[in-house]
Image (cartoon, rainbow, N blue to C red; front, top):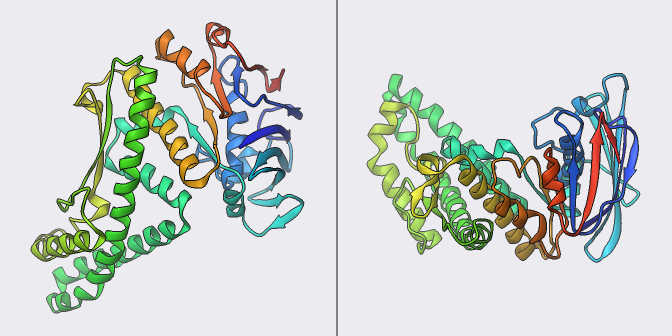
Length: 365
């Protein structure tokens, strides 16, 4: 997957322009608040039409305009392709290879990318929900079936929790709890198995990337932590049986608390650097390196499972990294296309081979 051109009109603060990146590393350099992240966001939107910053569609339109357009030319699936997104108010129009699509979800099948932003440091800094969200997002992008299973599991979980709260005031409803248990167990077992398989593969890839970034000084490990004592080698049937037993033995606690206390919604992914928990013991630079390794591993897994090298978007990734780690990111990528934003002049000067874009007041040179 290679982006050959990006065109934008009335997009945030960016001056109308067409940029033509190289097939390797592209450094986007300039002071803060000049438009560097806006450029990465435009590239990311072609993954499915949603901003990695959580912005609403109408927020990408320049403040004194009533529409915005972005267009991309890229080589993917062994051919040249184009995609366009037009934003008007809270609506957007998507076109792929000259054909209008009913939903921006159609973009997922044509273009893929992986993004790192400073907000992704919450994978380590915050609680288990951030890490579950990261893994679930990855497995859902790879297989639509996983997205269906996750959606169904969450709906069943919500209904079961509503029932648990009602049982406190209406004990006779306890007999109906089993109606939700089996569907929850079935979906939960499939979801956990997909997560475990993904984390296992991700861990192998991240270990290699982190050794490169840290120059062999650190070892990164990722482990799936189950609330139901599920092991990596368990089959879907064995996982289902363990979930069934947990729901059975935890039934009284569930009714007392009004929530389901066991299942994939309670699981976590542990991130370790040199066998120590990264959240507790790692420095800011180490945490940034660990998350970056996870994102690069995500890209590697995407390539392996989808047969296409994703575009890698790295926003403000070089800050808090020492020169050795910076040099690895700028000069050790092979075959994939990378976009990196930075502020420090010294960062761009480390680049041995690639292309540099300078951004000032929304103008890109």
